[in-house]
Length: 272
Image (tube, rainbow, N blue to C red; front, top):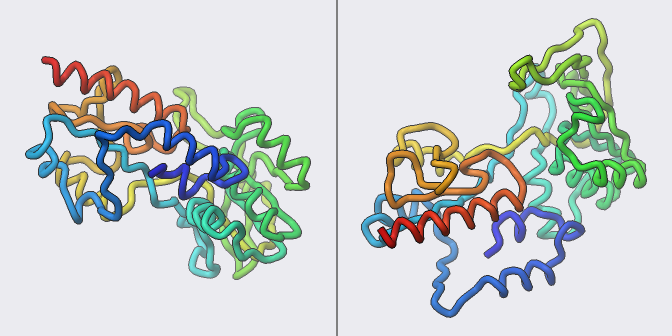
């Protein structure tokens, strides 16, 4: 039990002791846990509906996104989620002297700290956003600077030039007038960086096997649409969902809030 908290969040964010205490505080005698089973393989949403009066889905997003840029085949790269899972499991990861993390959120900062803590001499975080626009918390950025991690704002990856070199182009804006993600670039300004490890921290997506099952169940690709007030899945009475599978990669606090809203929605559903 614990999901991302147990398997991906670094111990420097949440220790095993704190996690165990949180989970122990939530478990009740009437609860039954079944582990090692995959939605879409060992059971289905429709099958759960046959057996239960209400169903809540919170499988999360367990596939890290990697950017398919020119030259991507020239170098081995990894995504931050995979790196953080290995770091949580082993306490360190195999890294070279120079690590470059692409992304500006909290996952990117955790990946940078994991690389630094695993022995990388030089760690750089490169992101599209300006410093004040970065999704990462100011305290996280302060921690990176204190540990000597270089932060390069306003750059987007353009091409992997070779096994250990990547080029970036200047990003002039990240969002359009409607606040939608629509980066624009100044192609006249670029930079190149050397790396031993290139780590993508540019978001997470639905794991492919799960995505296939959800499309079969709900008829749509990607995230599950819900009513935000009750967390009930659109046009699927009795089925509720929350967390990253609904909103995209977010925070633990947002996921817990979704669970509370869904619990109230389920309670109302069962009473009625």
